[in-house]
Amino acid sequence: MLLIFALFFYVVSIAQPGTKTTSEGIITYAYRNNAKELKEAPPLQLYFKNNTAHLVQSGRRANSEDLFIDYNHQEAFQILTMKDGSHYILKTPFNDFEKATVLNDTATILGYHCQKAKLTIRSNTIEVWFTNEAGIKGSPSISVAPALGLILKMVRNGSFETYATSVDLKKINDTDVAMPANNLQVVDEATYRRKQIDNRFTTIPVFNHQQINFGDTIINPKDDEINTVCRYAGGTVVVKKMKLPAMQNALVFASLTEYSNGDAYDRTGSVFIIPFDKKINFLDALKSGVKVLPVYKDKQQQEYQGVVETKDYLPPLELMRFFTPFGVRHYNERSKIEGYNWADSVNYKQDITELLPRLNNEVWIGVYIGNYDKGGHIINLDLEYHEEEADSIKKQYWVQPVFNTLNLMEMAQQNYGTMFDDDSLTVTVNIPKGLKNAALRYIATGHGGWGGGDEFNKKLNEIFLDGRKIFEFIPWRTDCGTYRMFNPSSGNFGNGVSSSDYSRSNWCPGTTTNPVYIPLNDLAGGTHTLKVAVPLGKREGNSFSAWNISGCIIGEVEN
Image (cartoon, rainbow, N blue to C red):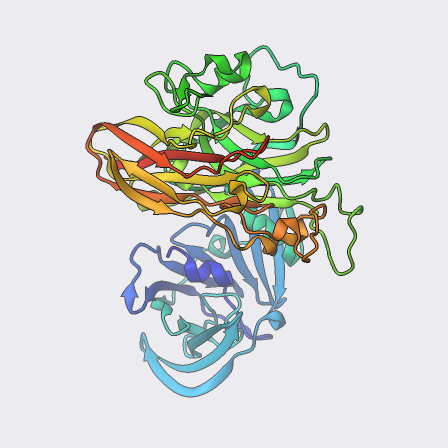
């Protein structure tokens, strides 16, 4: 709840146009929500002197902002200090604020006679109680009730209160209300808001305008250097060694932007991390070929390389599964339809916070897009770290990838996930002692792009733990038509339905596939068996079905 109300309306203080106020002092505010004190939120203090007001959150700037009012010029000032030391200022005239209606209700607060007023800001109903007896004008929010007087209580939507705990009329230092004078760049509101948002989190660029295609001559650097892009599997896989922030208390998002650079089709994409916990790793295979990976065999003795955890190997940890649309951007001008405004690109963004233990310090991050095109696709990938207050850390997590049948090295002879034909995928996992609230983070998409293929037919996924079925569901998406504007080169059938509109086995062209979280509860430390069963569709000539499934176990460990 920290700064919830103050930051939403950009707290500052306000005076009536033309008013000269000689008093000075400090007003302190606290917060309540549904009558419950928010003790974790630091108090808000309003300093007033020399016709200038400065709002301070518990002795420090709020989110790198300094908030002032110049009463002589009737303007509010928001001054943002960026992480690189640059400064931006936004000026807002008092007349730009919503006007309040003064009501007949009165109250006594901290010994001051107050009147009530009411206004609406962005669909929020705001009620305030203000006094003109203190000789100071001010408000705990820039957009609330300019020129009424000193606001001693403010209530948003009947539940969230910002209320004064003290009015201390005393002399204060000029420095308490001094505005920075140098190196301030005045910007408009849109620019300021963009800078303000970007300044609240850390963005780690991973790939920038990176091509993922097939068929280039590839010469990778000899050494595994930080921030050096390497390309494998004919160019369909790109990987990069990164140094990530060592944060234990952050929300983390993967954000990938993609557009076609020539490929017209919908393709499977994956963002992944290569674990280095054991003797063999997936990077070895990218460099030397799939034969270095441990082999998994189904009942027909068909071999699958590197798909399950073994005593010497962990499969790639999938951060995000996505599916490219049909030719976005590259085919926009070649696919004109009246009333259709094609998107310029697609942004895939997913919360991957539960994988944070694997997103610290030195890691190898990769992106795969299965395609056969010389132009392929262009991507940008960022990781966003939104750091939280230290006292919000509740739990520490353990993350272990255990299976991944998505053949990331498709163009380097890694087999498709067809082991489910009259069979299942079984893996032995080792669980540390004391793991609590364990869950399987499970991603599943079915493939086989003809009428009888699993892409277009509902198939039950069953999950077994130590021989007991613990979960079943049918991975299926019915919302694919929502994303039509991402798909300019999608075919249109005689029945009027576009190919991109058809429902599919848990994916749509131009979207991500969300993980499913399957409770495993408090697993005892030691060895356990996980099994995934899917009734794989039968082959028809050269056409076959496959299931791309990935799973990692997450759980709480002692701090």
